Figure 1 (cartoon, rainbow, N blue to C red):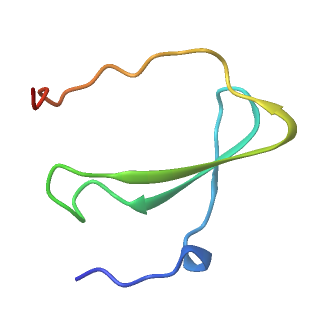
Figure 2 (figure 1 turned 90 degrees about the horizontal axis):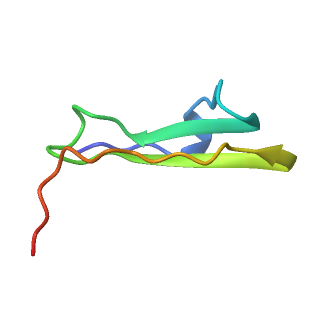
Figure 3 (figure 1 turned 45 degrees about the vertical axis):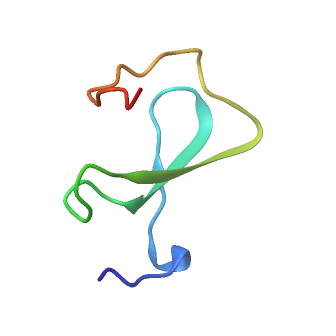
Length: 60
């Protein structure tokens, strides 16, 4: 079982956009077929429009 608090996770500045950082809450390899990230956007910051192709199959 993974036990950590969000304050233990160092933010990683993102190159795309401005004023954006990410924390990898659950990294690939810590859970099977699952990852969780937290993005923080500072006031005045932005992330460009984009799409993320999915490698997962639909459950429908």
